[in-house]
Length: 343
Image 1 (tube, helix red, strand yellow):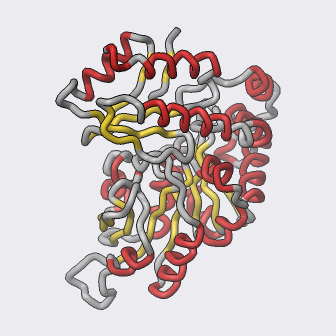
Image 2 (cartoon, helix red, strand yellow; image 1 turned 90 degrees about the horizontal axis):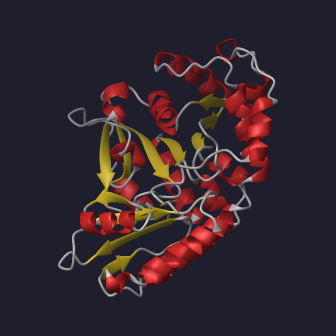
Image 3 (tube, helix red, strand yellow; image 1 turned 90 degrees about the vertical axis):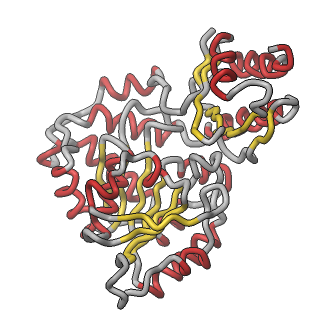
């Protein structure tokens, strides 16, 4: 039995999703004539109470487009030091937009409004980059699937309003946060200028993310997507998977959260596991005492037992639960973790 816990992007389409893909009505989306893509975009915009949406092949391209919309070359955005837009998008902030990042030393990928305000460069001091954007990630990937307190997000919005800054949400796993905290997506739509949401992580789609915002912003985003090479033709087959996932796969995320929490609890019982981050959603991040064995050796030991996980650097290891991680797999993994003292 091979158990893949490296990410929630490893899932395969369900039978119902495959049926939706095969029966999709399609057209040429570059000409905005794909009815399934149009339906997906309208559905996501409506979910967040925002004016418009645009389908993208990846979450990275979605975030990069949003950054391009809100900045000019030479500007600076503010984000946490763990932010995906800084750590895991290939330096696209600088390559695509000519923008630098002011990194905030937050907690598990989350920063306070006071930290954001303290990071803003004086707009009349032309020696430093002009601060123009604040980027938030919810849930935080490197922070272990942590969910932001909504009141903090509101406080940061007030700082953005005060200083004339744009506000973007990297919502790659926003569905997990919404389920874990029982929140309404329209509240996020009221708060942020743009939001990127991923369909290929917790929701189990093969491909795709969506950017939501005002109609003006999305009209501009179409041009940026074209420049980045993101125009797709009969993308309705992929969009149909997204529609199916939104209708069928959101509520089940609580199952992933429960399994992740149980994995974290089991890891805490292992003597050579140094630390396990609090587990709120579907990501478990932990560290081991490397006097016993290295992180790489630990990953290899579990791989030999058919369990795949991933290292995130700085000694951090990650397990991610997902819809293809069955209860049988879960019970087997827990039994392996319970016997780790024998490795």
